Image 1 (cartoon, rainbow, N blue to C red):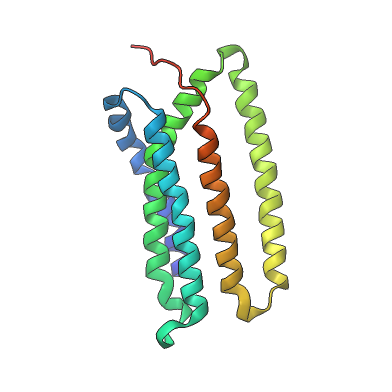
Image 2: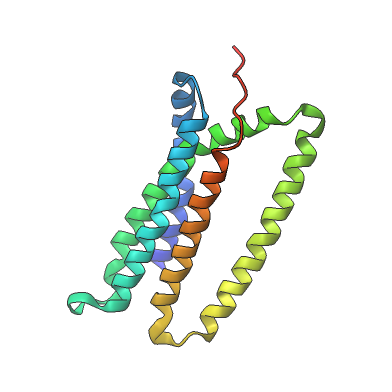
Length: 169
């Protein structure tokens, strides 16, 4: 349970990098390249987590799956650092695309859709993990992380085609 607590707390502690991002974006002429590359780096960590899951599944060198925790913790920490350093730039960039008259309704609908997809995804993955034999659990986690990595990188590739309005000031 202490390991789960550490994994959950890292998401909160890494929020510090949202403050750091203020200085990063203040020094950049354009937000989009930093947002895209930073988020691609963050999403690539899903493949590192898949690798940790495969390593745990293999029992390489007679190791126990619990010995994979330091790697899991390190990769999650780095992913959250990257996400927090980039996310405010994304919000700023995308908010500039939508006029004030529709911005609230756009982000409201976007949040509702994302929450619904997350609930369905969480339910399906949890249900699938219950059906998978215990000796294949880490392989299932690896598949989930790979799928998340592919979807995440694909999402950022789509962002390449979204325009970046000129910054004011």
